[in-house]
Amino acid sequence: MSLLSRTASRMLLANARMSARHPAFDPYPLVRLFNPLGPGTWLVSELYPDGDTLFGLADLGFGCPELGCFSLREVAGIHLPFGMGIERDRMFRTRQRMSRWTEVSRLLGSIGAAQAYLDQMERAFGSIPEIPLKRG
Image (cartoon, rainbow, N blue to C red; front, side, top):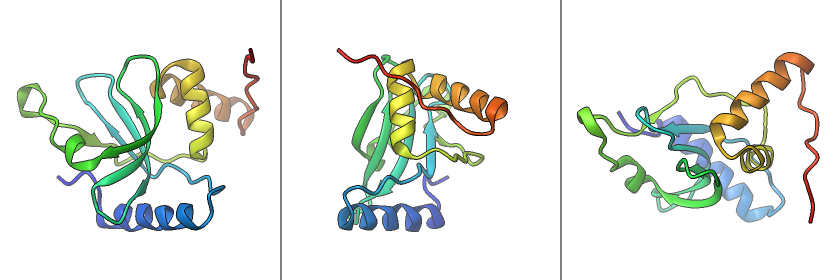
């Protein structure tokens, strides 16, 4: 199985073009990749024209999710026990933009914790209230 469908690839490429033209563009993450045997999770919002460079939020399970670029080939090349590899979450959908995912993931220490929080807030309030950040 390819980690990116043709449709997802086209949409991610369109997001990358929009980001290049409009630096303030805040896309939705369109693809969630995950390690089925561990904490690794990637939320992808853009695919660069080289077909390999992805942009998004990467959480390798160390408590500090990072926004930036990573290689599709490297992620796809991760070999896990039992012949498994990184998988695409085919059910992933979100109403939150990448900036919100980044903010909440960094505050809570992981994409998984952010997903639980965002889901809970949507169920409780129908929308997500702003999170006050500690400054200083």
